[in-house]
Length: 122
Image (tube, rainbow, N blue to C red; front, side, top):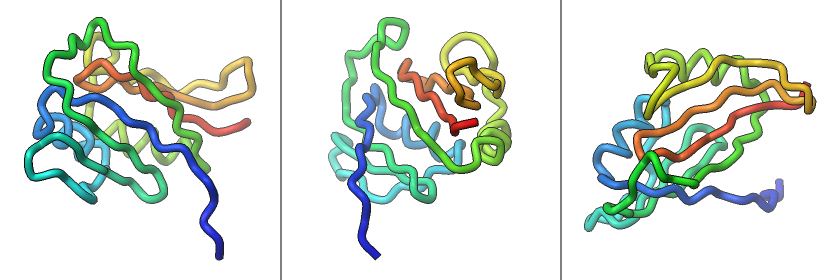
């Protein structure tokens, strides 16, 4: 089996420990972490995100984000919902919806203000 080419998002972390804990609440496991706290890699099944230290980031001004296309958005939504994130503010999670552009998706904004849209084709 050949591995497919893929893009992996790199997202900022004001505090690597706090950001790792946030993504762990969403079911991501730490794969690799720089002992100095400058870089980390987390995965959740086939999903992978990289985190880099950005201590001066202001979450309310962040323009970082990514789209995670998945095979079963409903299952991921239910798993992420266990984290009981609020629906407003930073962090937050939006409801799962069928969008007019042909995707079923929801969004998560992490504690650092990064926007993750998670979806699958309808």
